[in-house]
Length: 451
Image 1 (tube, helix red, strand yellow):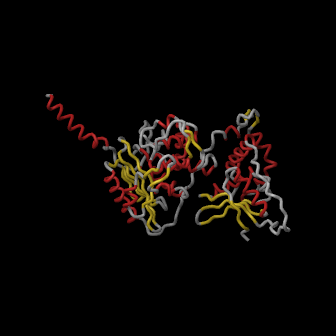
Image 2: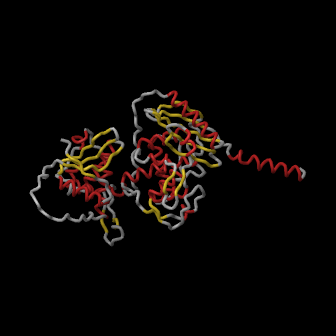
């Protein structure tokens, strides 16, 4: 080959390189979000690179961890060198820097920041590998049968694969399992602590009526991906595209699939929320419920305690008031797995964390109280399933037996979810219970008697 021909050949390759980089396999999927009914599928079960659609799972697990009390929005996360050195897109975090979890969530959801996603995973599970294990367990619990995760951000890695169907299933869970956080995915801009970030999907959100999320993704191996959702009246559609060749082409394809979905979906349908996957158990739980007694150090305080299944059994007589007859309260049969899980958490708290000290209110008596009747209650959260509400009620009851003694656990279903309430308290008792629970970072507010 002559030098001139070689130069021409190289020039052509350079011109074609951007197009070649985007030559990823195509897949498309459309779902009626209300029922999960499939409205369209093309290569929907082909395992492909999901790119940053992965971050939907990272954020889902973060929401789950917040709900379970494993971490809070205001937890300050120390950035590791691994997180700081992730390639773009990134927030620009530095190793050793401390930043609140809420800012990491915003950066991951809005800007699709890889450093933020890795930091979230490490904060929750301790390492990238451990977090990937939790991601895979959660995916399996959701029925995402063709998905395997290797990291929290979605950059190309061997075996890190998913499908258009599975990503739509995940998007549906994000919408219905955590509606209180879903607005993150439609914010055009967000304060991420160290910078204001802009949405990666603002073009589609601004151009398609009713669009309110969810997540974009891009790598050379994946092409341009998007899982999108839009609501019009009572109808909500989810569409996923893998392998877009440009932002404009991908958005046009998603628009086409969304229109198809709204045309095929019935105008009215009974909402059938997806089953909330069981929360991934903390690694300490099996130890707490094992038959082998062993020492557990009390947070480095120089005190050793024994925590085991025998300890939980020895606590049961004292815990009977808290464990008594959930069926009488919520019309449910007793879930022994849930009780054992909550017992494990309670034993862990009792072993390593003293009860918070709540300052006593000034004792000023001006008149005889008329609020001594047990007509008050406290609400400790709203959840997406009766099971989660009952589980939190049980955990709270175990951790606050003294102040909640005599209270009745009650799950109340509303149009927005399942309220977890303790009823049958005096006003003073409800106030004290809330102050003690808030000292433990448990949300709580007083409510009046239902009667």
